[in-house]
Amino acid sequence: MKFLLFGGSGFVSGRVLRFALEAGHGVIAITRGELPFPQSGGFEHIRADRNETDLSAIADSHEFDAVLDVICQNPDHIAQSVDLARRCKRVVMVSSDYAYDPAHRKLFMKESDARFSDREDYGGNKRRAELALMQAQAEGRCAATILRPPHIYGPGSNPGTIPQHGRRPTLLQDIRGGRTLNLLHAGLGLIQPIHADDLARLILAVAGNDAAIGEDFTAAGPDLMTHLEYYQEIARCLGAELSATAYCPGPDAQDVNAYVAGHRYYDTTKLDALVPDFPYTPFRDGIEAWVSALLDGVSA
Image 1: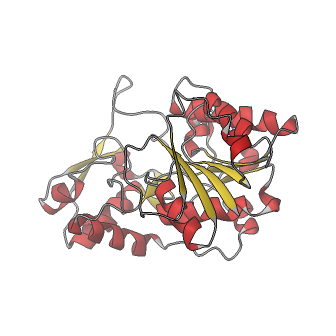
Image 2: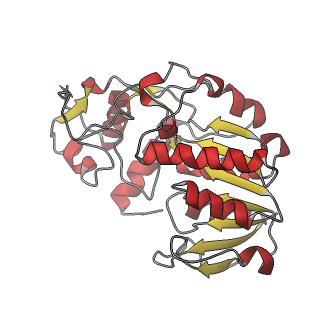
């Protein structure tokens, strides 16, 4: 296959590019050109800012089989992807579990049970983009698939899942130095992290699978844990003892958004049925490699 990829130098999109090329696919990557690519060649690069440039001519001047929108943020972005897919039709959108309404997440939630965010924020914008994509499919303008990952981890990002310690560049030093972490609600919320490698491979897997057309999937990792266990695993990899206390914010706390305050526990039966033999990275293995990469100063 040949993919038109939004991104190609980012945390997830860089992996999509690399794995696609390793699998023998062709790639046209659209980026602003501000970050280096994970490899030097084998693909076509279109340097453009999607927020400022009319990209519609690409659909007529290039041949590709699917549009992979790994960095879609809003309905305007997805409208752009649908337009670019006017000949090939196929669009894969990477959304987020923030698209789910945080006040109505059921434990072990299925996609069919979901209620969605309509907030004026990241999650609400992701959902509005999903709705625009679904409407385009209903009108016959595309054949769409939506993936909603929760917390994504791995080399190329900073560790941490919740307020005060989320994506914190000093987290390893804090744990090794014995600093007490203030974990939201004692870190007892549930989470299913997915390794960035796994998400990238899932994007490619669904892009080439006709059974994924018209479907939405929660792309959670294979292991369920509490946030506390997440940080304890990092401490174990460092050979350190985790010191943690409960952080119970008041109603006016400014550092807690609704999406991270509750459980993020999902039924992955639907995606498992689509890719039954998918080789997910066990969290223990992924976190060990990630911590090692961080200690070695490796970014990807």
